[in-house]
Image 1 (cartoon, helix red, strand yellow):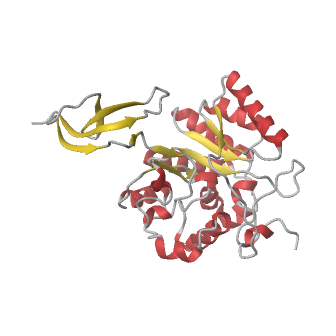
Image 2 (cartoon, helix red, strand yellow):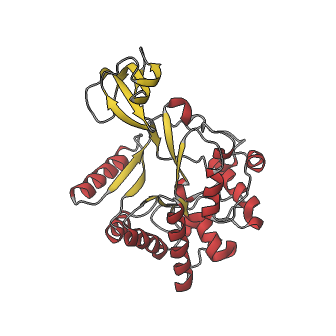
Image 3 (tube, helix red, strand yellow):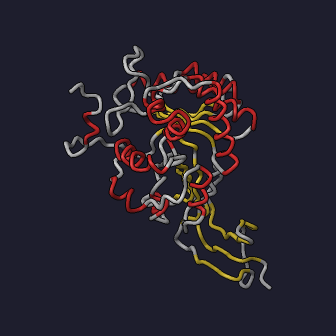
Length: 325
C-alpha cells in the first residue's frame, strides 16, 4: 500500500510564506499536504509530473460578486483561470438572501444596477430555491463547484427583510425589536457559514461629508448607504459575542470604524485603497491604516491588484446615478 494518495513531483514550490522557492516534491494524503520533500517512486497512488511548473497554494479572492454566478459557472470565471481556489462573496452589502419571493425580481434589478450583471442572465441562472440565508447556502452546497465559497451576510437584503422595502429605502431607524431581529438573523447566518457582514455606506443625501448614496435601478438609495450607525453596532456586537467573523465596508467614517473594532474585537476590512492622481487621499488612508496597526486595531485596507479602467459609455445607465436630471 502506498504511503500517499498523490504526489506532485519536480515542480518549483512557492509556499506563499516568504520562504525561498525550491524545486521539490509534495505528497498529499486524505486531501491534505502530508510531506514536502523527495517522494520516492511507488510512494504515491497517483503522480503528477510538475516539471516546468510552479506549485503554489491557491489564491483567495477576497472581493467578488459571484453570488449568482456560483449557480452556472463552477469555475467562477475568470477567477478560476488565474489560480484562485477560494472566493469571498456578498461584498459591499449586496446579495440574494434573505429575499422574500415577491422581491426576487427587484433584487435582480438592483444587482444589475450596482454590478452591471445583466438582469436576463440572473433570471435564467438563479434557481431561487431559497428564502432565508441558510437556505441560500444550502443551495450553493448542492451546486457542483470547483472553487471554495465563503459568503458575507449582505446588509442590503437584511435591512429590506426586517424593515420592509419602504422602510429600508426611506432609511427608517430600526426599533429595538427590529435590531433584535437583525441580530438574530445574523447569528443564524453565522451558524450556517457566513464569515461576517458587509455593507456599502456612502451616506445620506444632503450630508456634508462628501458622501452620496448609490442609486438603485429606480433611483432610490441603496438601504445600506443610508443605514443608521446603531445598526452597524448591533452587527459588530454579535461578532464580539461570538468571538469570530469580520466586517467589510466602505464609506464608514474612520472614528466609527475604530469604534466597531473596539466593540467587537474583530477585524474590519476597509475599502478601497486606490492609488491614483488623488495622492493626498490615498496617502492619508495609508497613514490612518498604519496608525490603526500601531494602536493594535485590526483594520485592513483592501486594495486592487490589477488596473481598473473606467469606460464611459451611454449604454450603461450607472453614469447618470448622480445626475440631477
